[in-house]
Structures are given as C-alpha cells and as structure tokens.
Length: 439
Image (cartoon, rainbow, N blue to C red; front, side):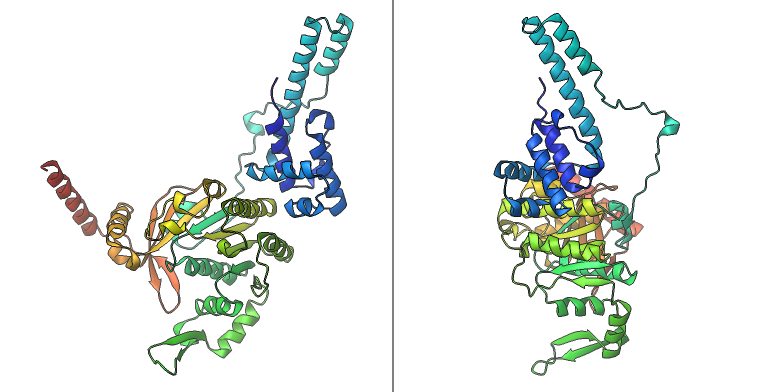
C-alpha cells in the first residue's frame, strides 16, 4: 500500500499558504490519515479568519498537530498545486482500499457479496477525473508580473524580480550590499511603487538620508564638513529638497521602526502584513541576521521559509540580505555554500546574487574574478564592483561589472570590453596555455 503522508502534508502546506481554500474547497476527511490536522487547521481558520505559524504556536492546544504542522515548513509547494495533490490523494486512497478489499476476499475474510458491494462503492466514488486538454484548450499566456533593477545585464540574467518570489543577496562586510538594496528601493519609490524597508544597521533617519541623497543632483546636496577635521564631511539634501521629497514620496515607502527592542521574525512578519494591507508590495530585509536568534541554523531556515511564504501567499517581492558564514570572511568571492545557514536557505530562494568591491579583493580573488569577468565581456580594471548571479530561474548565472558614483551612491553597469581588450585577453590566455604545456 502507498503511504499518503507526503501527499497529505503537501496539501496542509498549501493550506498554510492560502488558508481561505478551507472554505472554498470541500475536503473529505475519509481520504486523510491525518484528518486531525485538517480539522485542527480548519478550527483555527474559522476562529481567527487567518492561519499561520504564529496562530498555531500561540494557540498550542493540540501539541501533536502543532508539531506536525511546524514540519510543513520543510515542504516546497505552490498553493495552486493543492487540487492536483488532492486528486492524487483520493486516487491513492481508492487504490489502497481496492487492494485491502481484494486481499480480504482472497483470505476469505469477507463474502463474495460484500466484496462486490465494496468494490462497486470504491470504483463508483466521485473522483472528478481530469479532462484531457486539447492544444486549443490550453492557455499558454504567461502572465508574469515583475520589476527591474535597471542594471540591464542583471535584469536580463534574472529576467527581472518576479512577484511572489524571494531574492537573496549576500557579500562580505563593506562590499556594497546595502548600497545596492537602497538603490533598488529608490528606483521603485521613484515610480511610486510602495516599498517596505528594514535596516538592521541604520537608524530610520540614516536610511532616509541615504535614500534621498541617491535621488539628488549634485547641486541639490549639502556637504557638511566636520569642525575638527575638514577632510571629513557628511552629505545631505538641502532643506528645500528634503521637504519636497517628503511631500512627493509621503505614501511611497515605510521603514520598520528599529527602535523596537523585539526584532524577531514573528514580529517582523506581522509588521509586514500591516504594510501589505496599506498597499506595499516590495519588501527589503537588510539584513535578516539582525533578527533575534538568527545565529541558530535551524532558526535561519525557519526565518527564510517564513519570508518565502509571505512572498508567495501575498504575491509580493521580498529581497533578503544575508551575511556569509563567519569562517569565510577572508574570502571575497562566495559560493552558495558560503552564505549563512544551511543549503535549505539557498533552495528557498528564486534568485541568489552576491556583490564584491574590486578594490577590496585580495590578489587571488582579483585574478580569478578578473578572468571570469573578461569571459562575461567586462574588464575588471573598468569595474568598481561585481554582481555575481549564483542561482536564478531566469536566463543564466554570470557576473555583471558595475561602476559606482560616489556622490550619488549609485551603481550602473560598467562598459563592455572593447575588441582590443578581448583580443589581448585571448592572446594572454593562449600564451599561458602554451607555457603550461612545456612545463
């Protein structure tokens, strides 16, 4: 007999993503071995008109069901798949019962009349057999909603940032993660697309100033020099520009109040839901290592899973910043395995990108990155930074060279290699190959 536990748990995971399905779809308990979980989830949904891990853990009345439901975080599902899972569950239930009744008859545990009666009931149960679709009945229109980084090559590689997806960004300290995130946020805010931003390492005022400076022209900025050391200065918009931006973008972004002592993920998700209810659809978490208990690997997996589910359930974009493992700080070019947490974190992200500043690369990394960049049509000597796509559901995993405007705190795509640079690189490569063959 086939075990239905995995199918049932996939159905429950879909319900967690989209709990309204409980009242839209008639689930029959007889098909479920773990019907107690189904009943418990339905009871909580009808009580709170919502359903998530917070509600389940806070309710805590059914400890067995609660522990099983928490296991659902490990399941990778799309809630639309629930109908297919349910059909498969019913088919499996029927086949298992047919085997059971047949074996009972073979062992003479039931009479022939009981056997035929039960088989008739099983084979005539309503299983809503799927229709076979003809080509002209299949809707192949791809309705993908996405936003763009406005770094052309990066947008091509990722195919933009899709709604409903989680995007992970990483890099070692001071290599530009926050600069890139604020630049993306600024691009969306300028289009009056509502943004939520959590900055664990900046005050709300520092974030706002950084954001607005990136929106200014040079003549809209003030450079405030330190009274003790004139070489040190701070950059800020003029008062007139500051007031103008406050008015024009008054409803376009909200910032998580990090003066709140409790910065745990459950509090964060609740605040994000409030922002979503106010029309926010693009969320930045910079960085999730600033949340309480995030140093624990099992908690990191749960945190990333909750952000992923939030993105899927609400059809929003979540951009999550993660620090690499501390043991890898001497290494600038990261792999998926260097990013904080377990491989589960990488599996839960639609896109994974890292950023490196070329002036902070050690010699070995500089040479390695320079070679890969040249193969991707960029000369490292013309690049201030590099974004590397490590995972994507888009077009390809490659590197993108970036230039940096220090005054406006903006990245833009570096120029592509000239034919002369490519030819020189190829000649150097051929020379090294020939030298190596004579060693």
